[in-house]
Amino acid sequence: MQTYQSVIEGLKSQGIHSILTQFCDLHGVAKGKLVPVEHLQEWVEQGAGFAGPSIWGTGLPRFGARSEYYGRVNVESLRPLPFMPGVAHAVCDGYAGGEVLDTCSRQLLKSVLQRLKALGWTLWVGVEPEFFLLNQGHRGQWQVADREDQLDKPSYDLKSIHRNAAFMEDMRSTLVQLGFDLQQIDHEDACGQYEINYRFDDALAAADRFMLFKMTAHAIAQKHGMVFSCMAKPLAHAPGSGLHFHLSVTNAQGQAIFADAAGALGLSTQGHQFAAGLLHHADALSALCAPTVNSYKRLATSHSASGTTWSPVWKAYGDNNRTCVVRTVQGRIEWRLPDPSCNVYAAIAATLSAGLNGIDQGMQAPTPCNEDLYERRAQGLVMPAQLPRNLEEAVSALEADRVLRGLVGDAFCQQFISLKRAEWDAFNLHVSDWEMQRYAAAF
Image (tube, rainbow, N blue to C red; front, side, top):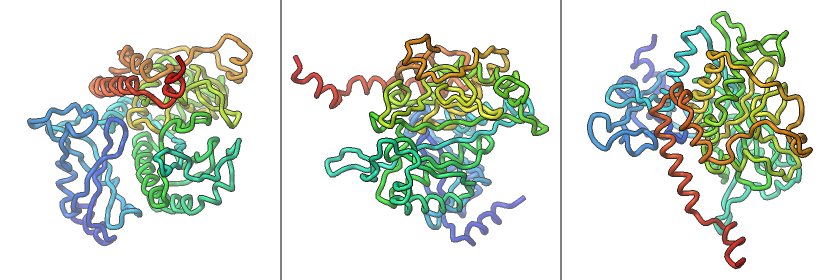
């Protein structure tokens, strides 16, 4: 086991003088500060200090022992940041008053994973980050950064890849230096939209890695004069961005719990029960997996300019069926609801909690869907139930789902509900350009 001094000396030998102590707020936005590497023991055992009420969603008071938020460094997460010379990145856990902070989303996920660990199981998560590259015009309007990216059906467009090769190569090389096992980079189904895939990991590591991915992408995009955007749907008439979770669970012997080659859809009984839990709690999960007003512009049955939309609108599941919110693939489950604006720790914690509740309660999944739900809707046929239509509906569903709130962590959920209700109220008070154009002179 390395001593603090040996770790410090190892970092200094790489030219490291500071540690970026990074945590995330309730919204899933990375926060932190730079601290000197020499005091590593303090950052690990006590934590880097922050004013608690200055961070969204901590619920901490403005005075007293619990007014300070302490981010305790995980030593194993320390790694030099290629885009910040002399700085090592460290993932932090939230504490207050010397105790685990129950409104810290990373602590939330760790707590839920303890229930899984008691069964001797491990959750593996592969995330698929989709994102847009944007910038602002001279009048401040947001637009696709690559103005030549204008194909009607832009999926897999190589010309855009060529035009943005410098950004892609910078991302590739930086992510590889940070230990990512890259699998593919492609242009997605909207103009200005890309996806970078990397290898799955255990749930906590996968969440940490996504946070590091976002930090890297923000830095590299800015270097190239662009803005990396996790907004769910920045373009009204194009597909939005998802953050699909590919989920599998193994037992202590490394056997896949969800997989059964002889079972329907290649799933075991527990796999179907897990999917049933996701569908049962889907309305409440929408709040945590699709947490912004804009998220519900993605989760809509609107027409796509490209002629295709993969929006998971209906509470259904099926084998390799991308029109369902739950897609089964080779004995694993793809949860298609999340978008990249979510707090990834909270979204994974809630997803796991819902699935385990399905197993615990022996929930029965509905009949698998073996048809294109968009085609079914176009024919005017009876449809499965639809997900919430807006953030207010989703937040109300979370508030009403006491079982899920209790499994995830009620203190975090209460903070989340309060902030999201305020966000919805602010949206409703805003007068948009659409309203002015439609109503100003109409009557």
